[in-house]
Length: 373
Ligand SMILES: *Cc1c(COP(=O)(O)O)cnc(C)c1O
Image (cartoon, rainbow, N blue to C red; front, side, top):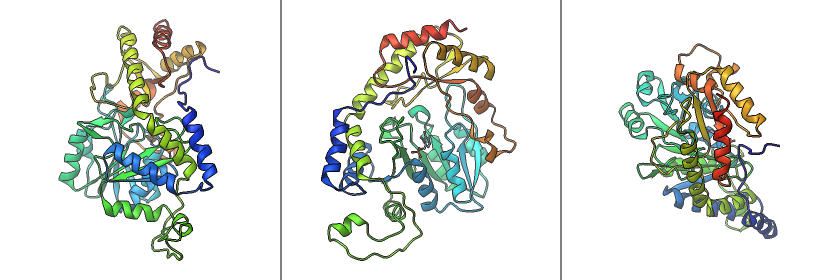
């Protein structure tokens, strides 16, 4: 056991009661709780449609399907992300085109680099907002418009994060969210797709449940008796137990994010005199989710980074790496020129981040880091 883990759940009595009440209601599959979760989520994000799904990987897959991405198409994406943001391109037999990040300080996809990678085959851009910090959405939407491309936001790290007054996930054509246990909103497994486009929303609802024209809940309610299968769909539904957890998580999301913002401020203060450490996005003033706390070691190597991580682990501080670069995985083997992504993947350390951390925890982490150099 670590003295300070990387992440800690923020569940309380409300989550326990939500699940118990849903069990007592005797409806546990997709039903009223999913609908309530969707309505609350779309209201909080100020987006027209929100659709619950089994996880974010399904959301990313359906995003590619509904946008008509197919074999022969190219999709520009970052490599500094979780594998699912890229695998979804392969699910529809399209080709991922990896784009480097902007800098060691702004570790999101580089808008200027995106434009250089566009070919007649390019169909879409997948944007990931690392740690909940917004990518350069103004520039990216401008490029997409100019070249007639779709934009999929993998907003897994950024529920309620903002970019110039808009919530992340609601700026592109489709936004995808994850409620995996260690995300800002935890339901065990879970996901949500958001969009302002009615046709996209309708097709996603159809595809999440086998392309069937009605769902069991509607039939149980007597609103429908028969169904047709009108599209080749999947079973990508969320259940009401998870949706009930999600609703209670949303009830205290804002408060949780405010606490995280305070934790980040303590980190910025405690790390400011350690000159071997870069804190990405240190200059960002937007309201963000602070899903994780990434730092980057200056003038470092992978061996040095691993040495620092081991020293922190010896002190009881759990760390992680976000991310092992996707282009280095066996299934994406090839030759790529992504020097900034490679520097970050070799020299980044993710420090603990969750709302219960105290100022003295952060000082302990910073002191443990300082003595390693
Ligand atoms: C967690 C995560 C995913 C995958 O989400 P699941 O709900 O586990 O499928 C995709 N992209 C990013 C950036 C993530 O952090």
